Amino acid sequence: MNWEILRKKIYYIDGSLRDIYVKDTSMGDWEKWIDLINTKYEVKFYNVLSGEIESRINKSIVFDYWNGKTDLLNNVTIYLGNILVKCHFFGGNEIENDITPTEINSIEDHNRLVDYLKDISTCLGKEVMLTPENYSEEDKKLIIVNENGIELDFSDHPIGGKY
Image (cartoon, rainbow, N blue to C red; front, side, top):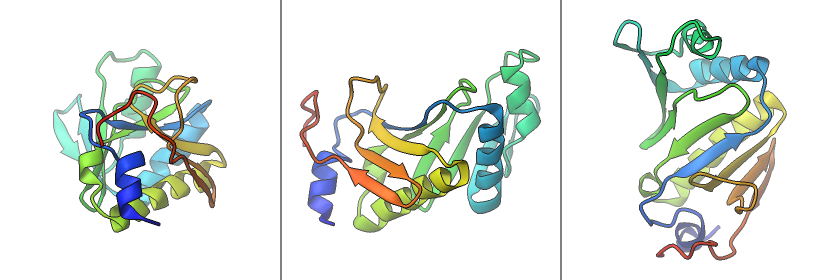
């Protein structure tokens, strides 16, 4: 794997984020994802009820938001070394995380991110994809992970971002 190609085609710097998606998720999928993250990764969960930063995602607070018991949105930062993965728990039907491509600076960082994507895919038995920010079905998928199968799209970015 060539780092320069990865930087140019996947982790290009144009001021936008990259999104990580798992589509068509259920509350059961979210529960599995939260358990995986709490077990395997360092996290900082912002508990809006207490105003405190916690070292584990509080499932009941997240689910209370989705069930309309509170209108306060929580978020979590997941640490993959120097890569910060953000999740804001917008809705239950898809898992969405954000990363900043400026934090991916080596083949080791890329591998660390791909390992995270593989962990999620294996845990949920679902496709996980890395896309340009604000993905729609017409956009390309930069990386697709199906458990241990990995596809990378090295074609030019459709909006012509600066490389």
